[in-house]
Length: 182
Length: 176
Image (cartoon, rainbow over all chains, first blue to last red; front, side, top):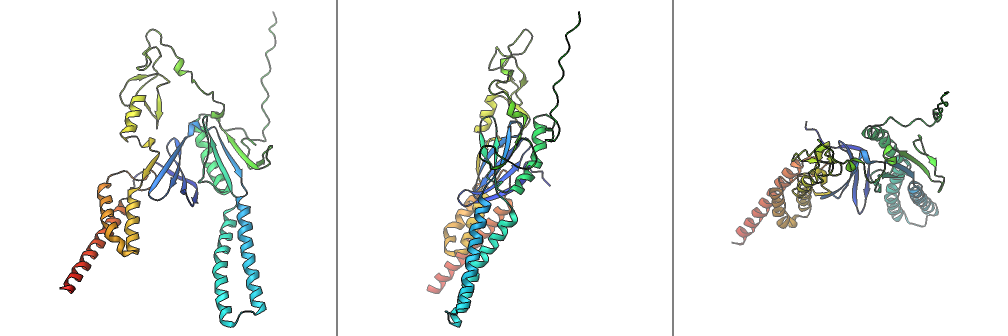
């Protein structure tokens, strides 16, 4: 099998207007791809130039949970009210139930998917000349996987040892040599 | 907040944040120092800056170049001239900032005309044209070659054209 120059990284996001966003790892760079099906736009981040990666939690997850949860709750309450009040005749009741189910199911599934995919975040890559958001990575789970995979590669590209763990004490500066005794 | 596992609240806005900082953050901007190396007796000079010391040869044309002119790409060292000519001739895939995926376009056209039949009168020839004209045009940088999509699109387009021809012949026969 032919070797592909790029390996897929965690994260994928569909933005209605911009198309599908994905992130790929090349030999010495990251490739952020925005694909609309017929055209692809690329943005490269060389591993040796990446100065920092920032992951910041966003409220998008909570907002969608509220919207979808509210919709589901409203539909359930509406269905119960219609069923208990008996304002609709039997035939209309069946049509009403079907209509409610048709609205309820997509909302409930969307809520379930949103809950399972976990909290949202925004990921930014900083280089010496720019700071860019990576739209492909929109969930914390994907961001954690991405950082776990990228950190050693970036450190290797910049030829340094990994940063010390936070719990380890800050190393003491070497003691100044004593004045030579003449 | 820097290089710690998990998220900590940003001291400014309070948003949970995690920052991984790398040594490039502390790298000095601007001159790398390499471009400042002045030539001394016995050193080779840069082709573009004769007063500066050459640090590497261009991987394409072999000219000696200084640190300022050295442009590293996928482990290869190139001079600005070779980089520019490679970019213009489209030989350097590393510089593509966008690509049209003709295989995907052809397949979509063929599938759309399968759903909306009358469209095939226009889309089938267009699909065949795209498949033939852009058969060797590089497709997606990250996806497959698109050969399967091209073949499926071409087969569908040919079938649609045959269908139209049969239908027109049938109408003519009925009319006469």
